[in-house]
Image (cartoon, rainbow, N blue to C red; front, side):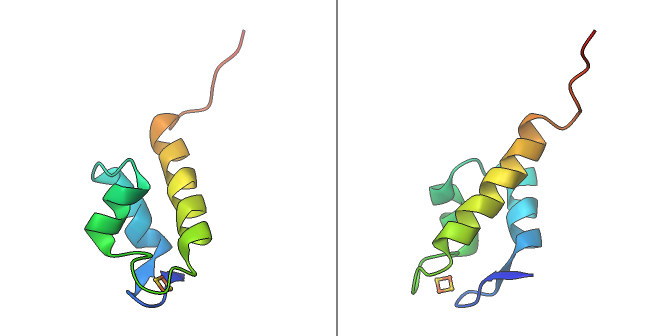
Length: 65
Ligand code: FES
């Protein structure tokens, strides 16, 4: 799904960027160009970035006793 129409950035592009080491929105913008034009995609781009970061940070379910 396209997140940023101005720069043709998809949710998959954002997940791949995170898998490649992107950790901040500024890094995502530098890597993909996302949200550097009209900016209307920024909320969705940030939400997609946060979700991707959560997967990287906690890739496995927590095991409780
Ligand atoms: S839709 Fe992303 S900058 Fe315009």
